[in-house]
Length: 161
Length: 212
Image: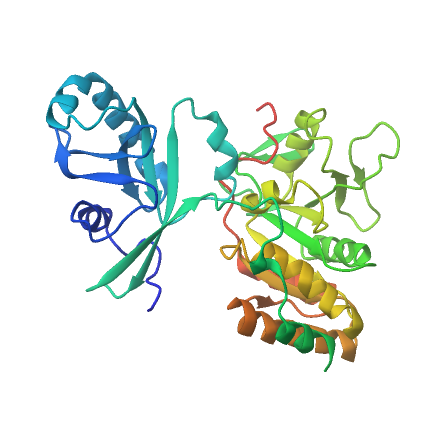
């Protein structure tokens, strides 16, 4: 698999792959159709219903995501009527982006509503892209994991030459 | 962007050129003993390259009432830990700088918070072969979780041994961690030239949210 340059896939294509179930955001269920006059895409995790926006950078789509959120809150009754399985609070936004500017993670605590961010990684080629979404910022484990341990091969490589 | 060039977003206040565009941030991660001097030498070389540098250290000791000191080599040095109490002063100095350097140690508690804020992380490697494995263990512990970082390697000590350590890391990190770090050489002037040539993008927000 080849890593496609960040931002080379259009947000519309990424959203289309999500809606058609050809890609998935970990821990998030996406309702497979656009809703309302704004064409909002709704996603659910265990606690919250979110609107979802895709962009090259978070700042590019943040305003649209907030407008979606306002619409979602106003049209809560309509959405519940269409999707009775949506019993969670309507309160959040999900943004998936290719690039996050340095320092962006420090801004996250300032958001006063539930929001989740994911990094979009595209593999394959333009014709048959495969998408991976990673939580942003990447979680840092408290304790040392097996991944962090050096192997015997690494020990030999860096100890004796 | 160099403040002296008077590029966009620069305004003159007193004797300072204060930019509304925050300077890029570079972490210098000490992966062995006696690498403090290497970090200072890189800061000095960046100043000689025409960059105004603010170097922040967690172990910085104040000399008198001033929050930061101007070193004989020309760069400014200040605390990493007093950002809550001296935010405005540090924010002002940040805005007057072309580069923000963080002299870091792999075990400082704030490292996970700092790493996502950096434009570039430079691993300062010891110049002795015997210290390479310890440096690699520390580097791997951090890098396996942060594969997204822009990375450079610098080995301290312009000697055959330092060159060997640098070559071993360039190869080892490629083979074992699938990373492609940049080669910043074994001398501070070379390292500074490599950093300057990267033309790093400024961050979206200043590190110190001073009063504008």
